Length: 363
View 1 (tube, rainbow, N blue to C red):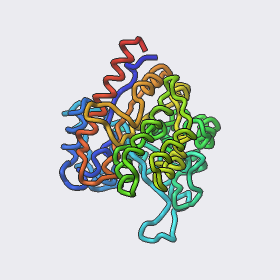
View 2 (cartoon, rainbow, N blue to C red):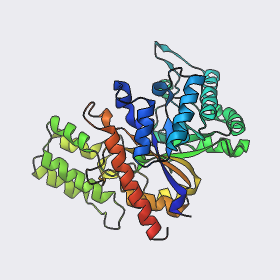
View 3 (tube, one colour):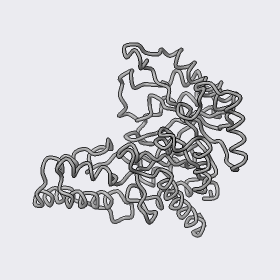
């Protein structure tokens, strides 16, 4: 158990808008990764690889040359395969086709030198995930068929647990059972997305509520109460009935009262769907990869959204060994206004500070 076993990386998905606009090419994105102090890289083929889903010799040469030159390690290949034909919304891939598509991802990951394929799968959003076939990807039966091939290739399928799914909700049980039944323990495992640890909504969401007519003072108060309730410091008791009475007294309307009932897809503000640090510590040694999801980091490199200090300590105490790779998505809320490179840089300063704190405490 040591925080020195935790390494930091970046998913190039974090720079999606700059890449789409042409402000960053592959070399620029990898240089940004190096510049924030990370050592690992996650790639998503649709936007980065010109010959996607295939990998040309020319791209592979550039990829390997740049990684070696920048002293970066390829870590993960993003899996975005789904069952729907987008040019024919009434046609869907069957299990055999999904198997073939995912095999392509696994072979590509091997070729790129990646240890993991981030698996978008039917249990991705836990027991709250949709049963609509349009939103399904790899199910447990296909996963079981894939496991021996993944193990043979030396590429693990990382089953992403993404909000509103939780580590402890059972949404991945069928997939974990498949690993046990096949005995292919090197073929796959659990991956945590930090969206399942959010204690507060972002400034962009707050601004959106204000645009819809919410009182900024009430929004600020609700954010304060959310951070208090879901910061597990022993001082997180919040009487939500008192909160409701207070915001009504402050003039709350439909928008503000609605925030108490549902926000961000994480369940009611009064009972957010998040895994506390104690649960993360319990599962830490079982995790094979982590997405450092975030929408905002303050200018002073602190976060209202996630309690990084407690969660990174929980991972270190629980024996996590592997990468936390940044996945910045704030630009999706307010396109063309946020500097993706800067937000990733801020998060890495914060995470390095947390790791240094762990080391100082002997964790």
